[in-house]
Image (cartoon, rainbow, N blue to C red):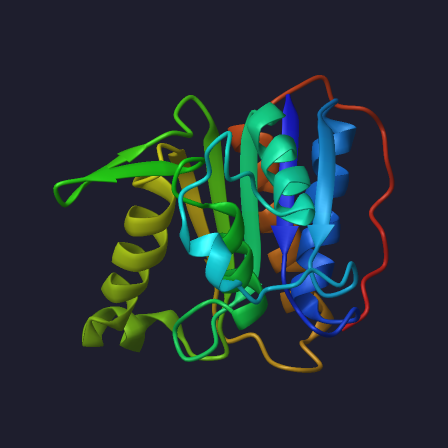
Length: 209
């Protein structure tokens, strides 16, 4: 399978990036192809220009960077988004990727208030992190808001089959090594459980906290 992995965190040494590295290495060990979009390190422009509000057509093509990202996504079998939750939402960099790449005419069509996804037949995985514990977010209804907006309105509405939303709560700087390794094990298991394949031997990398 061909995978596109989109990750957004300004710090290359963050635990978000460590999870992304463990996940993508597991995919490769399972025999999958993957391409990672590290949005911050690649300098992705998250700012939508006024002209990009128009639907993508043959007479109104996407900007070159968006067209490249859309071509990668079009050819992929699966998409994984990895990011921390800030104010219960994705970082602006990730939101900018969604705004520009998941454009009308590419990711969806809309008519008379109804949205039709154009990216059907592809699988999706969502991996998020928060400093807050999950239980009070669920109890307050805030977690449901996250799921409605990010699981349903973005991924399922554009046609993806969302296989899992894996969330890591109470993530803070200087995580105890046993906690960090437990999270890394979970993200590797997520890859194995959803996208099984012939495993190849590989060592577990050391991760910076």
